[in-house]
Length: 245
Image (cartoon, rainbow, N blue to C red):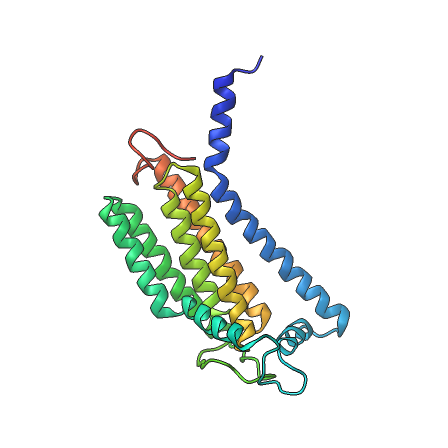
């Protein structure tokens, strides 16, 4: 006969791992989408940029490439959303989050957050320099850009910042609802920032997919490091006398 206490413990353990599974599922989804995009390109034209071109041009009207197919308010919203993946907003979000953790007395996890995000931002710049991919030139850009295209810095950095913060801040909480909410909001923010880059014509879809994938992987590794440090009692557990698995 199953011990009721053992059953409840297993359910509690699984609930606390929901945020980790959500992050893992997002990474898997990006891998699948990247594979499908490459396959679609080869099938349609035998050209690795076919999928990119079809989506970028498909979001503009056939008669005027400068005009989006969506209403004007959607374009305004996309410009606002894309700013949430910009350097200024992400820096402020990071500073506020690190300050919040420090105010809670979680100094080590605050330092881990800062180290992960700063190193990820450096990695983004290095990847752009290495691949040196040009921006889309099929349609006019709706916002100004200056750096190279691959991977999308907004997509990678938003995934890096929002997912890392959600994963690590979630480790300071024991309530399952809060942990799910944090990861859900982070995933939505990351998704919409990436979509906005393609909509505004400043990135190829594969730039965004790559940015999401690398950023999410970085966040997943940060969460794994935090888990190991908690197990070794080198960072503070979620609450006194309790650790989260």
